[in-house]
Image: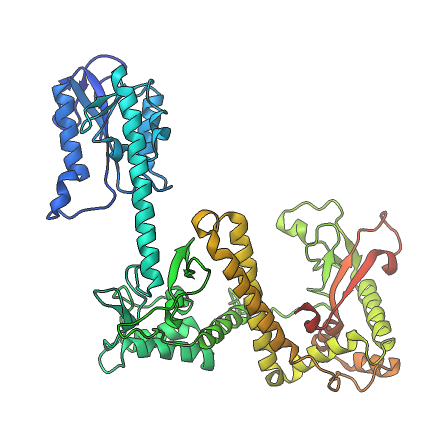
Amino acid sequence: MEQSGDIAGGPFACDVCGEVEAQPIDLYTRKSRRLREDDYRRGQSTDAQTEQGHRWAHRNGYAVRKVWKDLQSAYKDVKRTDFDRALQALAAGEVPALWAYAIDRFSRKGAEDLLKVIGKARVIFDMDGLDSNESRDRRWIINRAEEAREYSEILSRRVSDTKAEQRDRGLWVAGRPPWGLSVSRDRRLSEDVTPAAKGMPSRSDVVREMFRRVAHEGASTRDLARWLDESGVPGPGGKGWRYPSIARMLRHPAYVGWQMVQIGSRPTVYRNERGRRVALLGCDGAPVGLVTEAEQRKALSTLTRLAETAPVPAPEKRDTRAKHLLTGLARCAGCGLSAPFQGRSYACGGVLGGRDCEARASARGPQLEEYVFQCWLARLTAAEPDDPILHVVSERWTARVRPEETEEEQAARTALRVAERGLQRLLGDRQKGVYDGAAARYFAPMLRDASDAVELARKDVDRYVGDGPLSLPFLSVEREILVEAWEAADLPLRRDLLRLAIDRVIIRKAPRRGTKFDGDSRVTIEWAEPASSGA
């Protein structure tokens, strides 16, 4: 809507009828939800409010400059863009008056929003018959605003209590159920027996098959999306399947039969007042669930493992293999960034990305490589049979040459990482305030469950930590045998041999230019530790 005339003085033309009036006025309209034209509540829609505001403005010698419109709640802590702009226009003197349909349409936060404009500009609440320019009306305006706030809080509490009571009875109150489940008129969940597509089993059976393919065949979410699209199964929105949506589906608590509540951006297992999980009950009173919790955990562990091992596609086909012994191992002590091979030296890579490093480290390639090799040789030849370094070498060598023997162990370690991340995410959400207020009762039982999941996964990992025979890439740790094996190895194998025992090679800046390389004072080697020690 374009402004006509001068706001500060002189005539102003109405934005609808064009009639020239004395002063401009803004209208603020709000509705909690969009309504169809055939809805009987259309009388309170923003269109109806706008029409009534125009009539009031013309009767009282005003011309409507702009209509501000919000289609969302006035009480929830959400950003109402037009409401904020309307108040800013009043405070800046862009318009001398603001019309609102009613106090509860304006705000349900009590006097908090009203005090921003009362006494500074004219605000008219048409349905309430109140005008902030009238001294006798100010108290009524504030009182009515507080009443609207109290009513909204009571209504919100009643709705929350009602939903909590329904959840405790095992009813579904969260709107549309997850795909593969259906809800009856009395809010009971059951399996959706609708055929997923022509010639396909039911939707609930398709969900079970999705979990089975991920948990037992290692299928990815992309594999599932491709399979569903090729089978002609429409997605939850009636169109094709998107793999992020499938990933969210597989995490949903309802598929394992647990009641849920939305906390933050994720559906979370609901807890009653005693902190216990509540089962979703079907029409026969029996728990509803399509898969077991163990099946869901296994599927989620598979997704995590696939994400961790997914190859990053190269922009073009070229030889990306490392061409230097310590590429990937070397780090700059000044900034902690990698120190790739540049020219004739391993040097801090921060400058390559445009970063500053006050202690930029650099070391000549042949000298640094020889020093690291001699340290590696000395560390292994001095190791006793029970030295942890030999166990970590054995673990890593077995994973390299016989990966099939470590698949179950890797799955167990992946499950542990998933559980540890869940615990860390829960603690992070607590620190961010997600579990403040009404959600506080969910934190303690969720923390207990997350901690138990970590302990259970840790026990599974411990089963693979034993005193079995060592698997080493060489017959013994005798110096002559190691040197002979090293000299016979090509560059890729040498790189692998170093990484069996070394995690990092940290380089410090030379004390002054031209100083002879001294590995003992300038290099720190971080030796590897058995995977079990980090579990």
